[in-house]
Image (cartoon, rainbow, N blue to C red):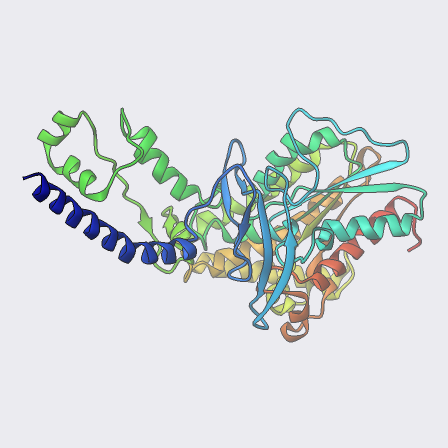
Length: 440
């Protein structure tokens, strides 16, 4: 009897060993290639050279920031090349060596001036091979080169991937005020133009709003005792069986997302239902108000507002507006014709639902009118209370033709080191000129 038991045990042990031996290589293979599991709160290495996307995590007030990340490369989608990179962030995911807290105060040296730089992923530096190759990194380089020791400039990178202007304003409120900046440089426009309608997040909402709302409503706000881990079968039983609900004391989770099947990813496919006309007009007003709030946040600081460049032909968006001097009859006529055309284009399509394939009337309406509105805002604020405020459309710094613009870009919006350097040098030139450290 005892021998039989040991015999059966031996057979069981042998079968277990054989099973493990067969399964272990499969598990090891998939574990090696698994990119779905990543720790939060500690630095991780991102699989660079793929889609130039940024891993992000939830944050209070500003919705999200990039995960504390090490990026090894970027994908130049215009040339097919992989760009080696060495990208690090601080603990909040900002591409800056300094740590930011809402309570910290920066002590400037007697001859030091601080520049705060903000915007979306282009400002953050997607495409830049090193942190000092980002636009703010190049601004700092050229400022100190041009100042020749008379003033030391420190440039703080508060740009963040996917941020719209109001998120930038909140981030500056949280982390920028303590730096007591002498200059604030804003480079944006792309996200505010595309998040609302092309990504269908709706007026006033940041990227990822729809999917965040879906999960928060479904789990935390839609159930009295939410269980965070639940399989599909279990949730189906809870939806359809009163007995299961009574015995377990649980309620089902209801996730009923609106989906844009033409979206770029599952995250962006969850949408808000919105019409093009109303969304575009609301978002434009919200964008310009956020920029005005940013300027009012630092009443003593000089300000540069600017629209980030894109790879496509510049005149395709802005026609001949920037061919003429500001205030000239020719320029005013070009502006009037472009604004009128955009208004008719939007009005004709106003009842269409926002989405990837339908959003162009809204996208171009916000982008162009946003740039023109920023220019007006800068003109209104310039020389008030003794401070300098100006506007730059950085698309004018590059050739008009798309083929000639490609060396400055890695995709439709993100820049190469060459593009970063071009913009950084120009911003620095404008700051040095206003500070009396350079001749026109």
